[in-house]
Image (cartoon, rainbow, N blue to C red; front, side):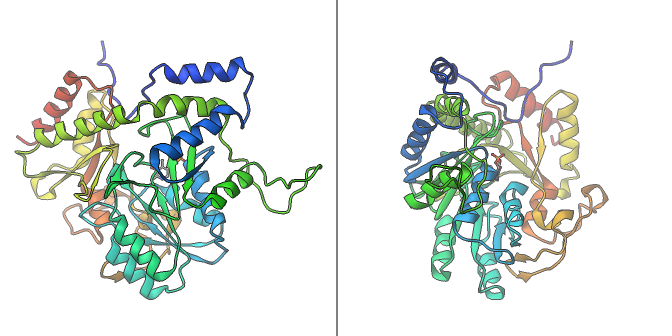
Length: 393
Ligand SMILES: *Cc1c(COP(=O)(O)O)cnc(C)c1O
C-alpha cells in the first residue's frame, strides 16, 4: 500500500464554512452579491484593521484593480518585487505598463529597499511600487513606505501570502495605499479561489466594487462610462471565507509551530538555513522554506526527489521574474544597479556552484519549500525531517 500523501499546503475546513454556505443556499443568495459578501468584507476590514475591503474573484484581480484605481497608464513604469509569483506583476502588463523588477534582500527575501532606491535614480518618474511579503515574512515595509512617500508614488502591498503577518504591530496589507489578499486553494485561509482589496481610502474600495461589477452607471438602463470587469466574489465563496476567517489565528499558530519544528530539527546542520523572519514583525509562516549551502553537495532537486519518492509534496522557490522568458528584456535592479535582460535558462542547464547574479537567483537556485500543511501529524513531521536529515548527516 502506498504511503498517504503529505501536502505542501492544502485547504483545512472546519464546518463553519458549510454553515455559511448553507445559509446562502437556504436564502437563495447564489449571486456575486449578498449578505456573506458584505459580512466577509466587514470581517476582513475588522481583522486586518486596514479600513475598508472589497471582496473579489482573485488576488490577481485585486492587483489589477489596484493599478486601475491609482491610474496606471500604458507605458508607465511600475516597480515590482522580483522574487515572487507572476501574479504580482502580470497585471502591470494587462495595463500595458512597463514592469521593472527589484531584487530581493537576504534579510527578509523581500524587496530590497536599497535596490528600490537605485531603481528610482534611473526611473524618477516611476508611477507605482508593488511589494510582496513572501512566504508570510513581512518585508521591510516601513522603509519601503518611507521611500514611496518621499518619491510621491503609491504603494500596492501584495499580502497574498501574508494575511495575519504583522510589521511593528500592524497587519501586512495595511501599509500600502492599497493592499491585496488571496484566498486561493493553498493560502493560509481559502475560499477555493478569491481575493480582497483593502485600503484606508474608502473611495478606492467603493470604486473597486464598482469596477468589479462591470462599472454600471447609476442609470435606469445599462449604461457604462468606464471600462468594467467581472471581478466580484460570489456569495457562496464569501461564505467559505467567513468560516475560514474564524480559524485564521489557529492556522497561523500551527504554521508557526511547523516552522519552529523544522528550525530546531535542522539547527545542527550548518548547510541548511531556514527562510528568514523579520525581527520587526511576526510572520504567519505560510510556507517553511530552506536554503542549502551549495558547498555541501546536496542540491534542492535531490531533496525534492527523495521526498517525492515518499509521496511528500514540496515546491521550488518562486523563479525570479527577471529570469522568466516572458519578461526577457525587462529592466532589473539589484542594490548595485541595473542589469537589463532576462536569464531565461532552465535551472538544469546552470552550474549551481557558480555565484548567482542576484540575491533572488541565489535563493531560487539553492532553496525549496517544505511541506507546511497544518494537518501534518507529528509522525508526518518526523518522517519529513528524518528524510531531509538523512541526506546531510
Ligand atoms: C497567490 C498569490 C497571488 C495571486 O492570488 P490569486 O488569488 O491566486 O489570484 C498574488 N501574489 C502572490 C505573491 C501570491 O502568492
